[in-house]
Length: 498
Image (cartoon, rainbow, N blue to C red; front, side, top):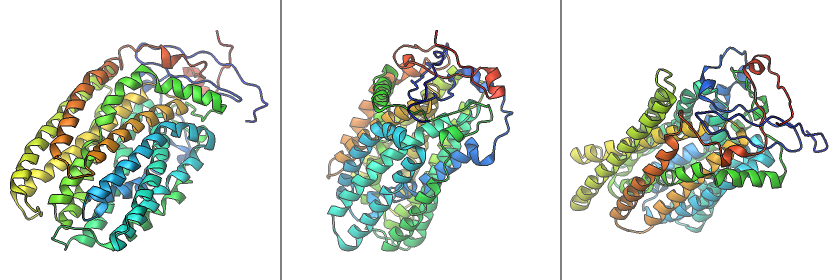
């Protein structure tokens, strides 16, 4: 809609007992038809006929396909530890730099998406990982280091933009009654890449029973798969064309840069975002620790096997918690609190197990192959469990965020900010492991910070499904809402704000 058309003033968003409504201001055009994400929305009838291409499940499949090709294949390489290289320290240093830029792009990515639109932003976001995989090939073949740093920075920037798109799609597009299962599907799709990529890696390296780097053919095959990502990205439907079975419209609103920045600041400075930030900071901290252990102690073929099998833990974790979070026999409040409590205990248990394993590895200094018996049996299950618990925690956190807003751009700011905080944590984690520092630094830092973050996150969790303050983030100027009759007719009753 052109900027000289009139702006329709719409009613203020209603406040619900169970959730903070996060409306955002329309400017120079009609606002999106967003609905306050009430627990009651779970019971809206899913009886609207939708075109399969515009359905929410198709959008999840498309974003999953994009992730499969770009960050997914990158994750397959990361699953080897050190990107498949012979030593971990330079790879960890470049990864730390990449995560710094990724954090920045995650945080501001929502602003870019609001200006470029979903399709163009998604296309751009698929390019960086292709370049990074190419620099890994150059480093492995010629020993040239500087392209690896450049590739990691470019990859971090484009991945940060992708996370700013992915987050609101997986939280705003699905119908509330299906959100948990849709998140489980998203987890499965995004982890098919490490599984299939890991199978390819394992097939190309299964005979290498020594430590060191993977074969050069490994990089070429994965780069070929990554190149499909830009084409798949063009299949995504813009928010305003998505058709939900509950009849609710989702639109990418048109705002001026000043208004976008004001909304962005309103979201990221909200107390609920700040309370969740410490937990998000530590949520992926284990990656550098596990990757370094694999590079130092595992043979190449065992690292390849790990890259193939460990993502299965991600899939299991996402689906298990997703199914639980969609269980309407249990209240939303109990689902939020029970899943949070169980997952926090499991995360701490993993790090205690990691501390025991670290001591044993330091004392024994083994070279671990899958034929190594007890050594493999002691370490490999821990690596799988770390992935299972972490992805289950991620699914739970995105589900929580989905209860804070239903507006696409607001969710883009929210998920981008929190993903940016995660990236800062990953940058710190990989920075610690960019030299031969003690593993006890990673273990001690993570356990300490993780324990501190739990009570702050619980202050948000305890409000889900019970009560939620409607100050700060819920008082952005306007929102467009649909009543039940609106859902059935597809119309929006435009009224003056009271």
